Image (cartoon, rainbow, N blue to C red; front, side, top):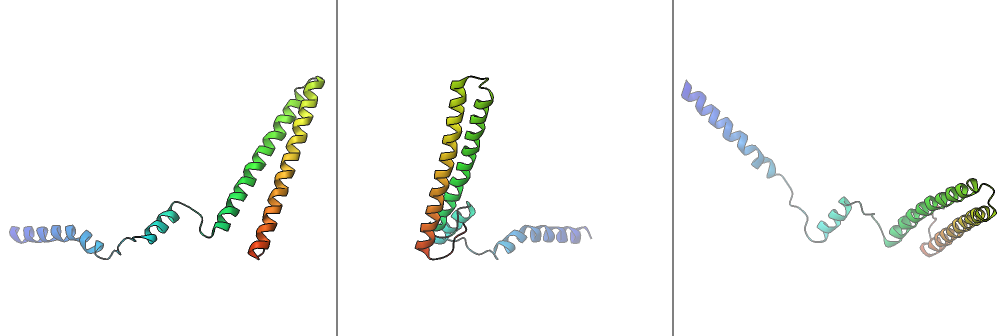
Length: 129
């Protein structure tokens, strides 16, 4: 009786050891060549599509960065204006900083609109203005 249990135990033990071999036999081979590079790039989170899509995503990112710096410029010029305490030189500095921040944001937004318009004309499809 003991030898039968021992034999069954050994058979189950080797069967459990063989499960990974059976399972790995069903795997497909990993991609090689261009497919491997494409899959690696997709797993890294790179954008899918053409160079126009990548440029568009970069422009959107730069517009967000511009908005952040515009808000920082507005806040800094506001703090300069509030802490002027009647000093005319600091008040004029704060007003100039605000004026230049507004001009910078307007110029950047006009550049963004021009680039999107040219992109729409070149590609021939509607853009997401």
